[in-house]
Image (cartoon, rainbow over all chains, first blue to last red; front, side):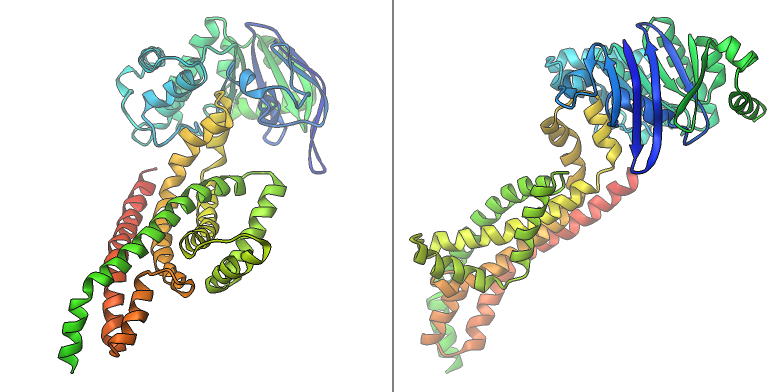
Length: 242
Length: 222
């Protein structure tokens, strides 16, 4: 589904992704972790080309992303992206946020798109907030609307870039619950997160990044119990005692 | 004598209304066109295309850096040298549109750049094409930054339209000149001209202030 072959990226002189090789299969849930500045956000932002890279190959659902002539609009419609800061459209209601892309990209009739949006909002537990504007919602609610917005396009892949990092602690659970449910339904997911509980519970694989390199990868049980590298061990001890 | 002139002025008042109408028509057409072109150029100016940004920047600098009266002379007197003949009326509209577009495109570009990058990212991530991103996500949000100075710009454009009298458009200002030849009470005549300009500018100034307040409260909500 997602295939990185020797991907390298530089921001000016800074080498932010170093020879990334990674293969994510359909239905797999991959958690990417690592210290800040390790390149993990950049990595998943490459998957729908919010970031370009200079060297290597990346195929997403068979589409070559290293080829800049690729029609991104079409591919992006198949990939949901959830941001740390939600980025809901502030001038629209929750319902309008969710229905916008189905109406304009999938060319659905307004009534059908709104029915779909109601269904997705219901799925994230916000059926009663359809007419609320983002400013009237808590952070956790906003993030769940953002997830519903992604799901409304029936994506093949969902990407999450630190979806709970901007939330107050008491709201993290409600967002993770939605994500756990999604994972259990077989969605292909790449999640950048520090929520190791989530990783343990649903990840098929944990990837540890440091300084732009993919340092270690393994199933969550082995990764937490027996990290193979010192850097991973240090990282785990830090976040677990945290 | 004063009273006599005042009565004369009232007699020819319909002439002033005609001038006012001409001012309204010339500036009205120009500001509609300037808004359309300003929106398009403003969007281009906020883009990443360096060539476009540079070209528009040069145009804006040229317009901002020269007096409007010179611009209108260039259009009215120099274009004919190259075989382009324009009557005073279309020349006035062309000149005002070029002027207004330059200022409006800067306002629009500023408004678009003020929309956080995350909004572009969210919109493009959900598969909207560039036009849809602008139409549904970016432009509606930039309106709150754009509208107050845009309406302010309309006021400036209406006042600048008085310059078109120099090429013979019978606008409000020119009506004033012509009248002064018959009624040699400059103060009286041009006070009337001023009042009539104020009558169309003031509602717009009020509107601009109101928009500014309204947008400010919306900003707090966001």
